[in-house]
Length: 318
Ligand code: SF4
Ligand code: SF4
Image 1 (cartoon, rainbow, N blue to C red):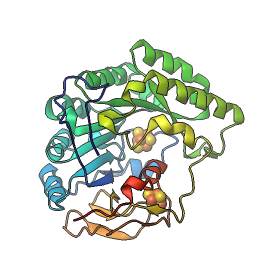
Image 2: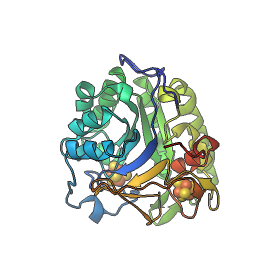
Image 3: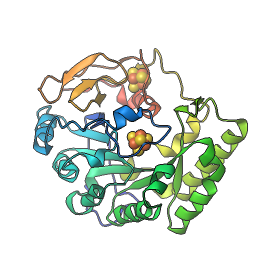
Image 4: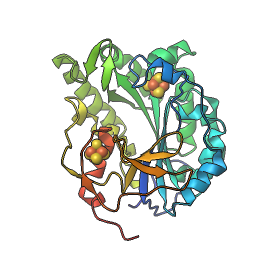
């Protein structure tokens, strides 16, 4: 994979090529300072005591011991509340490429500007969770942090989870973002909300509006569609494909387990949604699958779509 200068980028000195061997969906923690009512995780888990399983050097050593270059999608919970988050990103980005999923509520996100080369960060998914954001001082801080990161050269995509309430008032938020020169990408709601299961529970009218809003954001933000030359894994430009529900990948050949894994807060590694263990990064027992296998589980559709593509199904020489 070749990463190039992002049209949305700024002052970074990005390397002309940048390769990774394995991508990880890394749940650094499950604790979060927000309580979104559509969150995958219940309040008890979001409010659980933050567990630290390694410091920045410990995590860096663990990834280095694999002798692979990683694309680390750092998520949670809210990853920026992890102690020494900025230092963790700085340390990991020396050898690996990061992507970060954050609600931008913690000042640690600003630390990236001085500590991390934007050329080592594929993209930042800045998730605007409106109800929780409005309880904490409004949109201004969120917009200011998006702009601060973009001006520093990071590719930032602002997104909004589309509950039916947000579909109804989306244009209000879209206009606020446009007034700052920013796109706001609709994100299809998946899972439980208000006793209903989405996206199945969207009305026909909701679906029509959703598709319009998704297309409008993609057109507005077209220059940022391939940060560093490759679409972001959480590819908000293809969100329309999820409006009627994700595809079923059962039985399809997938590189998950060999080119992609899920990492848990304690360093344990799994293929994707499965409970089949692939070892633990922190105790040096990681053992990736040697080759792609048929899908026998389900997971986040962004990763499913990416790792069933032909370019990821070739067996890599070790
Ligand atoms: S910010 Fe994310 S992890 Fe936190 S409660 Fe909201 S959806 Fe859940
Ligand atoms: S659930 Fe998705 S990532 Fe996992 S094996 Fe199936 S297609 Fe691949």
